[in-house]
Image (cartoon, rainbow over all chains, first blue to last red; front, side, top):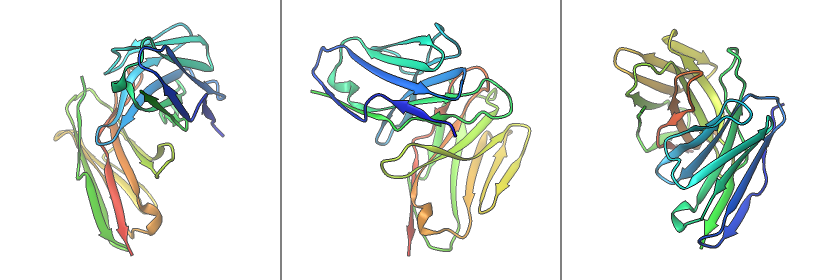
Length: 114
Length: 112
């Protein structure tokens, strides 16, 4: 059974702080993704990674960076948190194979920036 | 980039009736179209998906249809039950190239 975990369910940070969100998957998936979910806007892709040390910008990368030093771990970094980054952050992973393209999601981190 | 439009934003149906949610996409290169269900406070979970070489796919009470020419795809749920109440998201992607582009979601309410 695929398991995607995220380091925190709830996080409260101050404006200007550097914030780290961690995601770990245990299925040896090559591909990992970070989305943010806002009411009425659905899920929007921030960054993704196809391999260790590789990263690609998604649709809304501004204000974010990522790090993938190990295959199972994908970190989202908010360099200087702002109130408009208050949101639910969801990590996902999928295999690079062609048998299934299903993305498996983590439980989410609800970040509040005050 | 890809743009996915989803309608309606809210859908209320009587238990036992059918529900249909529709999505359109803009990038003709997209070739993978999943549907995710998200219950309140839970993570999105895949319920059905379709690839561009197939026009229709069914799994018990759930079916998805794809019209590549018109660039739209739909989710059909028959004999709706209370546990079908959730937010449903459609998405599109080019497999192997990037992540998913999601629609804004449909809140499906099953009335008893």
